Length: 223
Image (tube, rainbow, N blue to C red; front, side, top):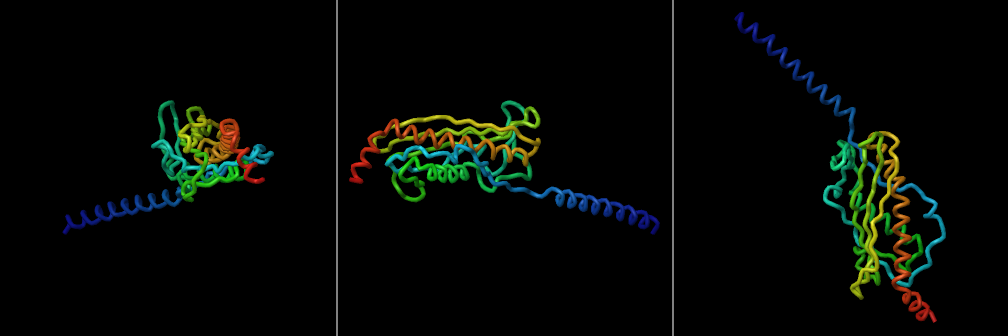
């Protein structure tokens, strides 16, 4: 019986430790909820400026693809050159590539640079096709608080002629106000606006330079 009395307090002590650990774990989990952020470019002066002269062509915007590591909802950061990692408990509401395609299509339509801007998912065919790939989007935290960096490659092609009208790589960055995921998101929003403006301006100028006859065709049809 004495041995039994010694075992019982020991068991109670172990049980108390297990319960305490469980409560602590729950407390930690409750204090660190998972967060989701919307990639939302800040307004820019270029977006409100006069549009590029309209091209008579229809522009087909294909879904933006992404390099493997960035094709995810997790927010990416780097603490040293050549390394990448995902923030824990901090994510985008959707993969950045998907969001970028929608934002770019909307900005192209507002620019008035083309007679019509549509997406590949709409089943339409365009005289010109714009393909984009998200090469990088990450918080460079090698030097705190770091900078948000975005790199995108755009290709404008003419499927009827089977030629590439132009290709260009766009890069943008913005300082991060605080060395965390929330600060990185603020900086991504600041960097993304000018990058989208550059892509829109380039697409319109490239179409005008490589397809000047499209405007003449449109004038003939309107007579």
